[in-house]
Length: 117
Image (tube, rainbow, N blue to C red; front, side):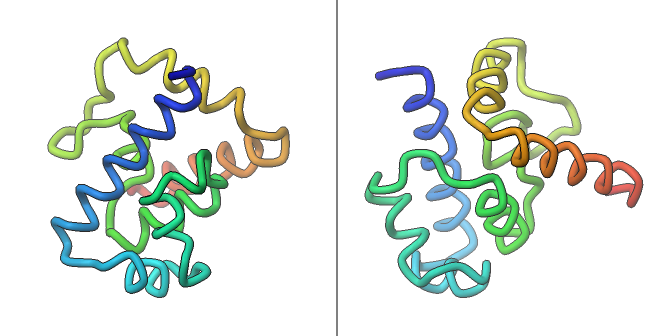
């Protein structure tokens, strides 16, 4: 398994865990997030390996979670980032993004910080 595949798998497993915890089907979560009706099913069945950052944010909002929890970068029960073991995951994730996606992510993080979330 490559580094990018393992990062995608962390996201997929977290998505499925919180989806089940919140009682969503793949179709209902896709609808709530404003995505194509197959979007979550494609992630669930590994047809989508690395979803767009905008998809991650939409799914996180629909699940009422910070995106970093879905990405495996933060423990949901704490405000503390996950241990340094996730640094390669972060670096791999960031390197998988286009320049415009990285800028969008940075702007989103700034907005979250400014809004006090």
